[in-house]
Image (tube, rainbow, N blue to C red; front, side, top):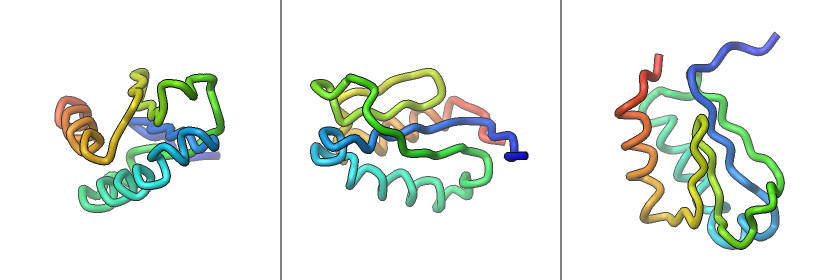
Length: 88
């Protein structure tokens, strides 16, 4: 049985999103979770295309979809989301 997580992050690793920036965004998310000791409370997974290729890179956090996520916009997305959410 998998552990229950308080939050979920899905990062698209389809070829379009991957090449448009999610390869780098993957590392940013991993570092963010590790620095804040959130790895045990967040289900972080990669997935393949969800037909939003023209709006990628795409990242989903809980029930929100973020499109055209860049290396410069991702940290503020993560901070804004997890400052407002309970990460326990």
